[in-house]
Length: 149
Image (cartoon, rainbow, N blue to C red; front, side):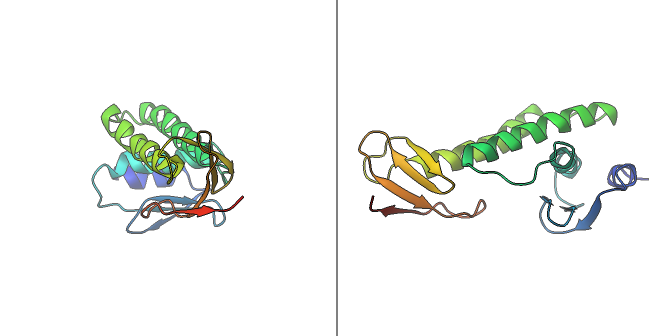
């Protein structure tokens, strides 16, 4: 039995479906996974980490980063159980992509200083007071649209 089959058998309360991308769908209680991707074992443990941490939704961009960090912490624990070693460089690369995404979203389009997220998708610059909205998509180019107060 290969690694993915063993893990899937061990977590029979979760539904697993093959896909082109890894992701956890709390609405459907499904982990979508790509068995053929590089580092698929690590990504599978990470998605199970979301399930075990009971991640459902997030109310801020920073909350999403926190959930991703927690899922990797849980993946490290699972890796120990399965005698798998997850590359710290890989984890940092993954988390770094979320940090970069957050930085781009929080940068003021007017003065380029860091802003604060007032509500999900709405930022305000602490330097110039400008406000902007960002798209809700996590996996696409960051768009920022200035709004009037």
